[in-house]
Length: 446
Image (cartoon, rainbow, N blue to C red; front, side, top):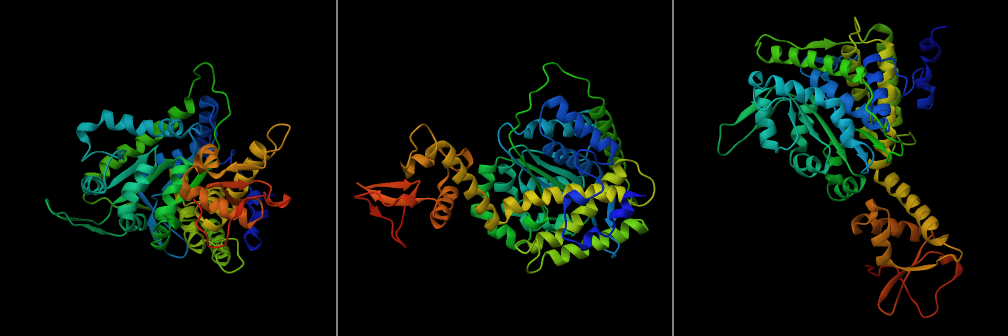
């Protein structure tokens, strides 16, 4: 029995990633999957950033060559907006370098042929990026310290980035140089960022970016710090070489397209069976964004998710050299990747869920490191001490204070003032501390 036929109606049930006939780690996309698996083994890293960085390399090399058209007739770019979240040892730079090095090598070998600044923009400003896109209409905005992108270009240029993602034209007005329009440009973004810096960024700019629809366009993955030992000796990397060779083939086609005024992008469409599958999936996501659905708190994300799935399916299908229209195999691989990323999006970018998860994490940390630390459980600690010793990403007041408030509301923490110092009661269920000045509703705490 064809495994695709056996699960074609899964969309009518509450979605479960595990119900797909493909799985992360064994995707039916040979070049892509084998390169990621090799990265994990060769660098001793987790796979999340491998998948994300590989997708970035594919999108940067392909986005100017083809668009995708969904079965309901909508056509849009194959560009992606990618955010990876991870700590210092999660493998951000390792993954980025592993998969984007082929683009840098191509630029180094073909600098004399490249219009503008080339394909990759790592340390740039919005005006410089748009000026470069005016000369070469395909670019990758990349940072392995992604807060630079988020606090700089994203905050200032979110509306223009939205328009480029959607394939719309934008006008760039300049005071000291000639203004211009970007009518057909393509941009992929890869921002790999520390969770603490991302959380601080969202606390100041998240609502505004949510309101303009930028966050809903993102494909987000989060990776834990790696505990996998790196190989003691270098190992051969034939899959990386094959992946990079395909990327450079596509970049060469990009250069040809840039110099051809008659060039028209290939339109990637779905075959009949994959088209039916995509329509059912999109219909379920529409329902999932309504009251009581799994994306009730993120309806904009639910609305954009089918588009990201279509983009990734087109990228994988074309990159792998598959013949004909996008098939079910490529589509299922895209759904698996985007649904796995969606779980991380909801966990990090839906504030109600993100804060509750972080509060639970902080409470577990307090239990392990303070309540149960040593033979005598510790009950009281100065609030400032928690600010100094909490998990690194939670040490900023803008992040920590709301979490403390949640734990107070849950009855997991108490708060009081004694001799001018604010204290936290780690076990408020045991009663108040004699002589303490209790915290009152509406009172300002540090």
